[in-house]
Length: 305
Image (cartoon, rainbow, N blue to C red; front, top):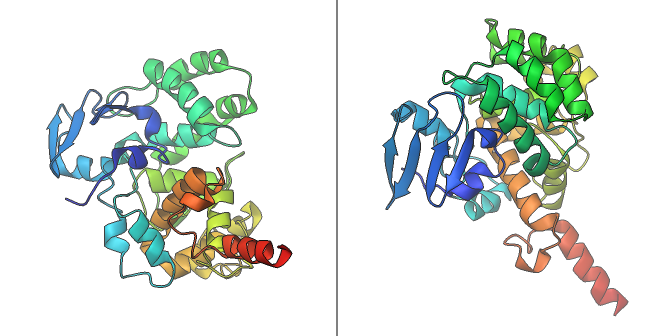
């Protein structure tokens, strides 16, 4: 089994509202195979409950897309990032795609760990069954009780279309991405996060300010790349490999460079930026010797002195 840090596994994941960490035990609270309890002891997995199947646990414990697999296959400065987080994988749950889509939608422009997780858990405790299916009638009653934020109001507006899109059969993951992007209030980051955290494709890359900052500071990608725009994606029918803007798009450049590990590297970048860069913990940073902005700041300080 590849190494697992349960705290780092849960922290960036859009499956977080479905789980709870009790000491060293991972408990499935809601959705598919609820009440399953997983514990890692001495590198081995102990499991009790309905979700104790190898395939399911492989997604829950991030084994399907893990930093260990990417080491030696990406090259450049990203290797140092992967080594620094060699116990991190992408936590996913394909059977809970509806709950994950709702969580991602609610996470837009708000504090994920404070607001989104609270909203989602309240909704799922009332309206999500143990097969991972969300009751729309129930959700329409509960959503207004969660608050007055625009995220909640917009979710109520698009919920039926969002769930219908997820239930449709699609010719490829790119087709699913395109259909998600055609929905109101759904942008590239939202579509890609749904795909990645549902375990549908490792190359799905929910680019955000955190990924933009880390790729710039560690020179993981060319400095001119920008976060994707919805209109670009729709014009290319959401197919990144042949998009005319892929060389200047953060997601497109990431997929071209890191391929099936692109979503993993974005996830690790999010963790690092939140734990170090956003808190200005440069002195404690494992990658400070590689950081362009840290080096520039040090040189500026020396010159000024």
